[in-house]
Amino acid sequence: MKNLLIVLIFGLIPLLANASSEGIKNMKADIDLHNKSSLQRGARLFTSYCLSCHSAAYMRYNRMGADLGLTDKQVKKNLMFASDKVGDTMTVAMTKDDAKNWFGTKVPDLTLVARSRGPDWLYTYLMTFYTDASRPWGVNNARFPSVGMPDVLWELEGLKRPVFKAHLDHAGHEEKTLVGYETVAPGKLSAVQFKDTVTDLVNYLTYMGEPIKLERQRWGIVAMLFLALLFVVAYALKKEYWKDIH
Image (tube, rainbow, N blue to C red):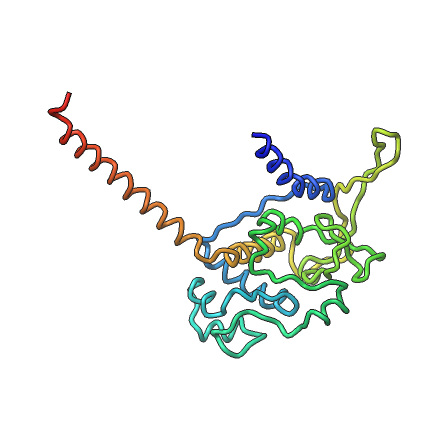
C-alpha cells in the first residue's frame, strides 16, 4: 500500500506542476470524429498552416484521404503541398538545426499531440494568442506562456491584446489576472467563424492522434454484445448440466 501511494504521488506531480504553471482553464472543444466535413476542413487547415513547420511523421496522406472520404486525386490537389507521393508520410523539409536557429527549440511532431495534450488544451492554446511586443514573434499565449511559436492563424482571427485585472494576493502583493481581450486589428473571419475554424483543426488533430478510434469503438461494442450473448448461452448450458445435481 505504501509503495502504491508513492507511485500515485509521483504520478500526480507533473499534473500539479502543469496546473500551477498554466493558470487559465481549458475551453471545451466540440470534437466530433463522425463529422467528415469538419475533418476535411481541418486537414486542409493543418496542411496549409501547420505542415510548413510541424511534421506528422506517423500519418500517411493516402491513409488520411481514405479515412476522410477523399480520393488520391483530391488529396494530391487539395492537401499535398510538401510531398509528391500520396503514400508518403507527412514530413517537412525543415531540419532540427534550422528549427533551433529560428525558434530557439526543435519543432514538435504533431501526430500524437492531441493524445498528449488533449483536445481542450489544443483548442484553448489556439484561441489564446495575443500581442506581446516583448516576445520574438510579437505574440504570447495565455495557455502556453512564452511559447516560441508565432500565431500562424492571426490573419484569420486578427490581432488582440490582453486585458488584465489587478488584485492583491494573500501576502498583499499586486497580481494581474487575464480577464479577456480587446481587438487590435480584425481578421478575415468573425469571432464565431474563427471558433468553428479552430474546432475543425482540433477535430482533425484529434483524429490524427488515433485514426482507428471509431473503428475500435465499433468493434468494442460488437465484442461486448458477443460476450453478453455468450453469457446467456453459457448460463443456460450450466443450468442444463446441473439441473439434476443438488
